Picture 1 (cartoon, rainbow over the protein chains, first blue to last red):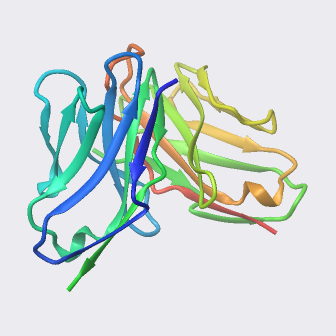
Picture 2: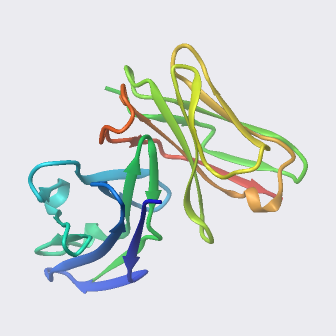
Picture 3: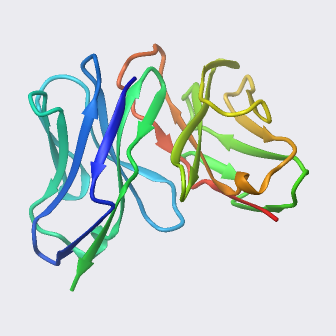
Length: 111
Length: 116
């Protein structure tokens, strides 16, 4: 079965600092991997996705993620945190039309 | 292009009642998926419909059901509500002409169901 593990349910970073949110996947086949963001009282918004091809994926709002098969990881990064980045972030793996989500990481930005 | 819309946004029901939630996908999208989000269980897949047929199903009891209409709009129904059914129910749509593609799913704002 495909699954993802997000390390750290809460992450706090200072404004302007590097954001690193960790995600490891378990999959017997090359996965389709996604990062979603959820702001309070809203649905999920796609940040970026990996399907095939380039392993460094750039998304919206300055986020990017690198697919590392050898480490089974798909960590999300942003060079400089902004106050508006405060939200909950979900890593997900997809098989057919079913998304399996990690438990989420709540990102807090310290002014 | 309009996004995924869900109605109602908020709903309060009592135990034992039933509820119907509605989802209108992005124009041209034929796949609609439903997810339940709770603090304890996180985001869990309920089911997916494509061309009026249930194509994928999660591990939920039979009280949870759904359907899709010819215009791709979808409804989900929960019968005999339990306190544990209180959750945010999210709908997502995608093109998904063929399963296995990495088509992205676009999510609606969700329906917040509270069961008293």
